[in-house]
Structures are given as structure tokens and as C-alpha cells.
Length: 97
Image 1 (cartoon, rainbow, N blue to C red):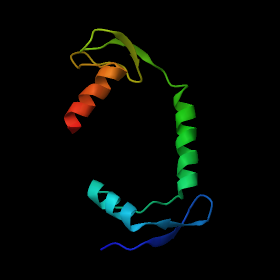
Image 2 (cartoon, rainbow, N blue to C red):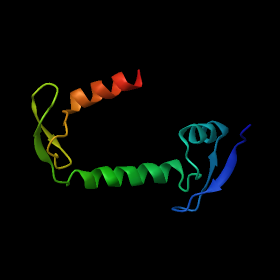
Image 3 (tube, rainbow, N blue to C red):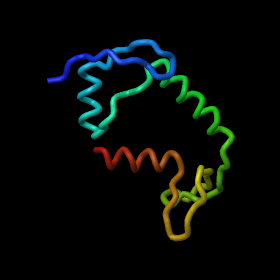
Image 4 (cartoon, rainbow, N blue to C red):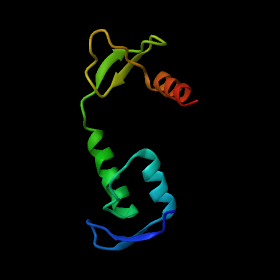
């Protein structure tokens, strides 16, 4: 149903292949737009965002599941549960199962 497409990266100008498998993955997730950057440029942008994220403000909270104090990248709202990294990962895994 899908065939490989050759696209041009808007960042570096190089051509890259948008494979049939990637197109199927995009369609399954409901993504309408084709990628605009090659894998190398996407990885570079992701690394820059992650580096910038290390400077973001963190807030103290208490995990609603285990009661452990933790740091979260958002200001906790009154009446909404906050989970530590471990409990959040466990709950997410349970939802996906």
C-alpha cells in the first residue's frame, strides 16, 4: 500500500528516504504530515531540546502512589495527583497492557 518516498530535509537540504514502514507508522498514529527533517537533523534538534530542558525549573511534590518526595517539571495543581518517575512509568505500562 505504501511505497518509499524520497524527501528533502528542510534543515540540511539532503535527501532522505521516508520508508513504507515509517509511512504506515505515521498513519497508525494519525500523523498527517510527512517528516520535514532527516533522522540526523531530528536527532540533533531533540538533543538540543533535551539540553535546554536541563535548565528548566523543577517543583517539589509528593507522589500520590508511594508517598516519596520527587521533582516534577510542572507546578502541581491542587486536587490533581502527581507521581514520581517510577510510579508514573509503572502506571503508564499498566495502561498500555
